[in-house]
Length: 259
Image 1 (tube, rainbow, N blue to C red):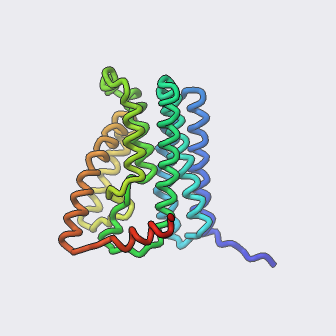
Image 2 (cartoon, rainbow, N blue to C red):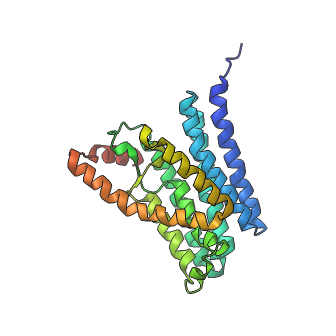
Image 3 (cartoon, helix red, strand yellow):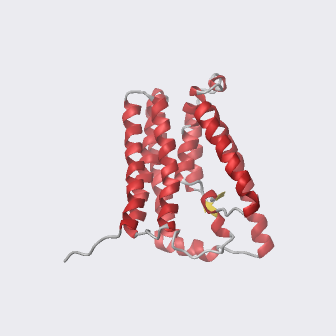
């Protein structure tokens, strides 16, 4: 008799597959140059990506299969799809250079996900657990898509004198993903009861702006995230000095496994 599988382990995987379907649909929209719909698909895929792991832990439905499926979906949704989107939108006009930086981004996304899978089971200090090593792939995709987001909003004038901006932004995003620069792990931040109502109000306002001023709001979110990167770097440095934290052992473990 075959062993039954709990529905709890299936629900998170269904969410992941839905996100993957959105990423593939974004590629379909990109091929017909419907960048508006393509970006919406990526945004919703990012929301589902943030939800599937949290739901899996909440209902105790985590599994190795789910973790691997999530990484493969992330590679398509936040690696292949946004890179192809930017290439078809603008990078193709740069010839071989445009294709090379597109490949670099996709490969860096793959390396970033491989490193995350390798280090996800390492036991960390609770303070360090609030930070990612490098920019996570959904955020990397958001950075790469900034030029298209700008062009679809009210800030398109910013691109008038920025001929090589798409090339520069995809290189920056590639570097940030594989770097060891600490970035805030917003999914792991815990909120005290005193701020719950305030966060709920902010969420409603954010949702309203996303519905009404979609691309302008996405642009502001992208800029704020970029500004948070140096803040997270200095914040972690402060915490390390304050609590005398070291991560050398983790880094040596990672190096041994990679080599």
